[in-house]
Amino acid sequence: MEFIAVGAAILVIFALQNYFYQKYAFRDLEYHCSFSTDQACEGDEIELIEEVRNKKWLPLPWFKSEITTSRWLDFAGAQSVVSDQTRFVPSFFMLRSRQKVVRRWKVTCLKRGEFSIDQVVLVTTDLLGFSALSKAGESGARITVLPKPIGEDELAVSPRYITGDIMVRRQLVADPFYISGVREYTGREPMNLIHWNATAREQELMVFQNDYTSRQSVTVLLNMQSTEFEQHEVIRRETVENAIRICAGLFDSTLTSGMPLRFMCNGTVTKGSRQSIETAEYWGREHVEGLLQMLAKLQLHSTEDFGVYLDNIFSEVTSTDIIIVTSFVSDALMNFAARKEQAGTNVKIFTLTRAPSRFDGRNIVFADFDKEEQP
Image (spheres, rainbow, N blue to C red):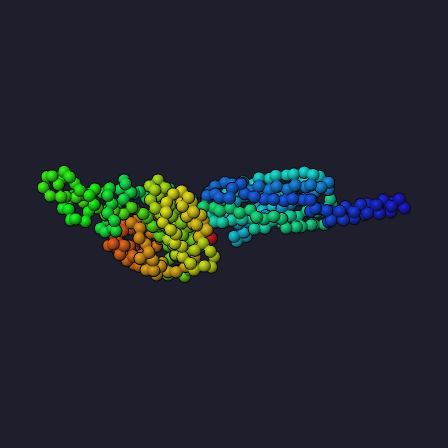
């Protein structure tokens, strides 16, 4: 009888602890995860911070969080599982009564983009592991990973003139700071333009001759097509990623010169959208930071054929300099460049594949990258 009583008592204890854990395991339990920063660059190492607080008297000897995130966030030391574009990371804890535990993961940002902790599942058991209990945890951590700028010297964008201004054939208002000579007074010039020394020498009214100028500015045009006959979805993904990194380097290089910068692209930051990107012309670190964030969000598909896109925006591109970053060189692209050069615009082309020999001698730079294609 004593054995039966002891056995019954043990069963009652097991049942009670199981009941208590099922009812109170997740009560007064707080879980929170966040990144150490909301913005990083490709290759940077950041931290994912997990914080678990058990605010009750009931201990949790076995507690696990299952984190679901992007495969492009690499967790150092974690036995994670990668499936397609997703990474699953398990994290184990042992929580005593009224204890707080903070765990910091070292995370390497492998690729540009917007990433988040998509889902967190919290799992625990009773003391003997008879019952598996689960609950969804907070999963609001987000980070924007900027593309790593290409820092090669040939990507530097420098003003062609120290002052940042260049001569143009025609402008609405002449620039009083650019004086190219003197000419006869016509009666329409203000008195402050009279050149008194030349007037005394020539014995007739002479005035300063001012040239028309325009401040130098640059438009960066990015082609999101990786091949000439591609339909929307990018085929050579790493090639286009390298083109994006070149654009990031070009944006950075304008900071030292202070040139106004504009970005245009036959791509979009919204999945499924057909609205191409066109920014205002501006300068400064804040403007460049916004452009880099836009590059981070670029979707790997094109909104329209690049040749058609160039025809549509021809009259809208009014900068003194145009830089085209493309995975290939086509007749439509070279026709656009030739028309712009005839209008007095300086055009430079960065290509990720060698241009056909018929385009030799043009202002084309071949950017060679020894990288394997990534899925």
